Amino acid sequence: MSYSVNSEEWHTNNKPDNSNSFQGSSGEFGAMIFMTTDSQKMLDNWEAPTPGYHILESENVEKGQPIEALVLFSGCSANADGNCIAEVDYQILKPDGSIYAEYKNTELWKNKPALPKGQLGLAIDRVGLIVEDNDPIGVYKVTCVVKDLVSNNKFFIYSSFKVNEANKQINKDT
Image 1 (cartoon, rainbow, N blue to C red):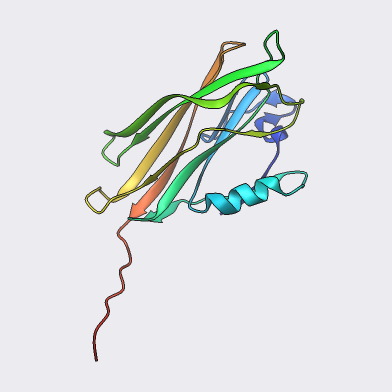
Image 2: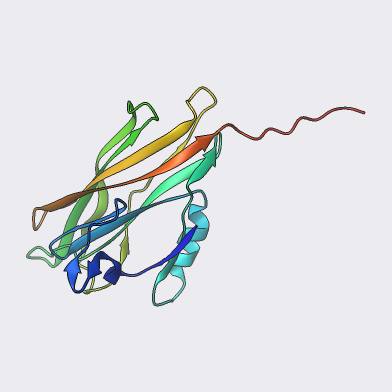
């Protein structure tokens, strides 16, 4: 699945729209999370000059294949120096709801100039994983608490992906 994304997607009729689990906002501060198995292609798309950003989202992954959570954001508040200080807390849940991994206070955009209104940023720290052979198959959930430490705005977003058994080729000598 792919998306073309711009910062207006957080708004409907000029009001914040949190109707999708993968997007959220508080005040002018908004973010979206996408899962991808091809982060390099996504980063290449990010560098291409277009009015929106083309994102390759993955909903399925085989054991042994990497998948990464990408958080896009807009509207973090500037401090007295004109910089944003924004973080993300990630939690990855296994299909049974137990915690697979947690990452607290990762850098969304820290001590960097606030982006112009309407411009999207890509989180500096990204979280990825490779599901191992002994991990369960099923739907994993990636939750994020997105925090603007200047404005004290924060909100919750999440996405999910399904892990399938690896499709192993069997070589037979003939």
